[in-house]
Image (cartoon, rainbow, N blue to C red; front, top):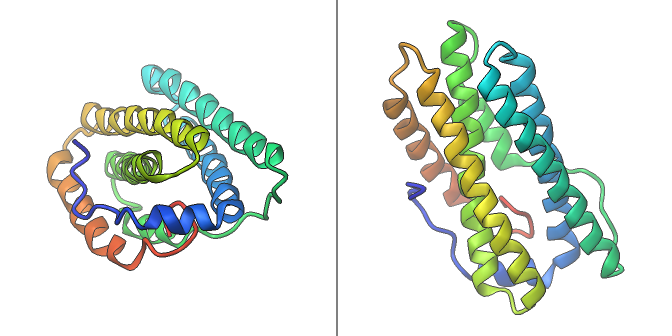
Length: 193
């Protein structure tokens, strides 16, 4: 369904489980950044009422996920680490087309968002299927479903408001780029690392 070119090796879940404090801190910050991204898209596209309405819900949901992850960190007596850079996301952002026609930049920002949600969905699936901790496994299963919904929402709005942009062609370019990029990741204790 997601069209990703490379699946995460299930052994990555062991890395995550062995470094739970780090993975949970990283995950919380990913949720905070997803909230900020949704709000930025609202700011940039305020005239698209249906998209704004949907993105308000996404922002609220992402902030709720941030809170949920923080609660898990506190419940387990773990340390909530400082925000860190997400090299994977930064590399994706560099692939975005900026400048030029407004529709082109908007479509790429939506596809950028869809790509992050797709990979997060896939990573959460790996965690849900491979973590020994049943509570965390169930938590990541729920988040996997949420990320899948966000992925389809961003992709749907890119198609709806793409104008003259060949969204299918551009999405395939994103999938190819991400497929090459992700080969350098999957061996660190971070959601995208």
